[in-house]
Image 1 (cartoon, rainbow, N blue to C red):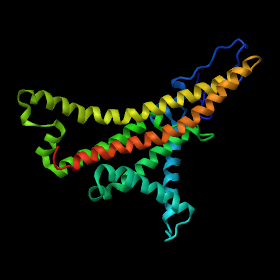
Image 2 (spheres, rainbow, N blue to C red; image 1 turned 30 degrees about the vertical axis):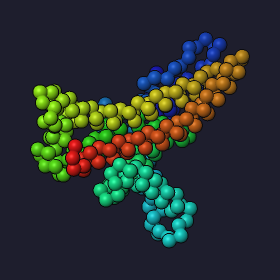
Image 3 (cartoon, rainbow, N blue to C red; image 1 turned 180 degrees about the horizontal axis):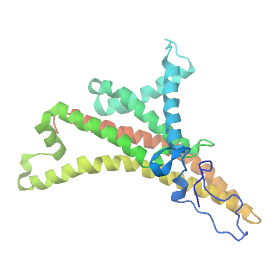
Image 4 (cartoon, one colour; image 1 turned 180 degrees about the vertical axis):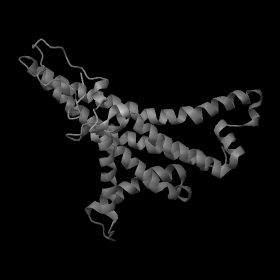
Length: 273
């Protein structure tokens, strides 16, 4: 089935149970969109996920700009919400992992990262959009790469070349003959596995959540025929349940992503490893 940029669920609307057509199960085609602009064959194009990422960035920037462009001693509702979100990440994530003295300078970066990831996740349940940008692996990979670059550069800056290598490899001369093996494992884990798992954790959760939402949504429509209406009601109830569950998962995954980012940065800043 060809992908349609105007149809997120990618299923036939005239297909129901007892009509002689099979269940149009979701799959990878549910994550593929034709270019809204440009030519996909030339790799120069603009599609729905790119549009949502751009709109999400504008929404996050616009929200904080509107909240803090004229800050008041007694904050209004918008400023109060923005301050609560900012303070939650600052105190609950950055200060808890890096401490106030070391972590203060990284608060804007972590706050921006959290709200961007959260917004990209939230698109999944927003009408018309109905697609989590982070379920496309390229977006979590780029975000994880940014964190990786910050972490590695800070490690070299704080500890120097030799110190950074010891940091990455878990160098400890007390390990004796086992030291070369441990250093190899630690280097592989820190420099290759860590950024990979950082990206995949976010991607896999949002990918799976979107598949489940699409599955129950399609099933609700597919069963809406004859006696199948009773089953359609149960499936639609699951859509509501999964939507509420996704709201929790979306915020949780954004939180976990920045918590791990803070943990990596804290490791780069620590004096002893």
